[in-house]
Length: 268
Image (cartoon, rainbow, N blue to C red; front, top):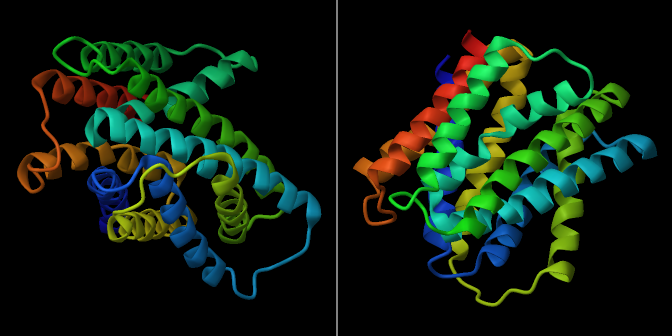
């Protein structure tokens, strides 16, 4: 189980590096540098995996644009505006949105879905209260990250049914997103490359280890561990990286409620 804790820690360090990097360069530039770094990692890992199945490649391009392009840019801008702790916790609502999409497709509303929804909305209310975060746009961007990530999961699932190769599939998505981003967003302020490169390394390593973990462990074991990464961010910013971000009591309580809501979905 140490490997699962390591994955959550890597995702947390990714957030902290982004928060540090946006002190020097803008969030869109940070997203580009991070994506470029991760594209290189997954392209190398895809050596001898390349297969020209055009349907698979097309599906994974769409999945990549949703997750690595739209959601990643939204997430980095959310971190820039409201901080790593609030953005990380609010974006973790992807589990809620995935359940909501399932309900819209005809799945039943269970008690654990109701419990998760109640705890998550209480957490969002605390984070967005006057004593929490006042930047509404940042909050919307973080929640949008969760929604788009959940949406991309359905596309990824379809792609994996065509060809079960998440490493090459991720490489396709990363490269497509990296190629498109500069033509869509302007870079108003460049800088902080070392932090954004580190962020790309951390998140790339985290995703790779997550794929390996899903081979060894069931999803019901992996996801509860990974969903606590905002808790690592809270601990690290509170004890180790105090100069990066100030955390209010409402942000702490709201983040914990969101994490508890997500965990309740898997553990109840």
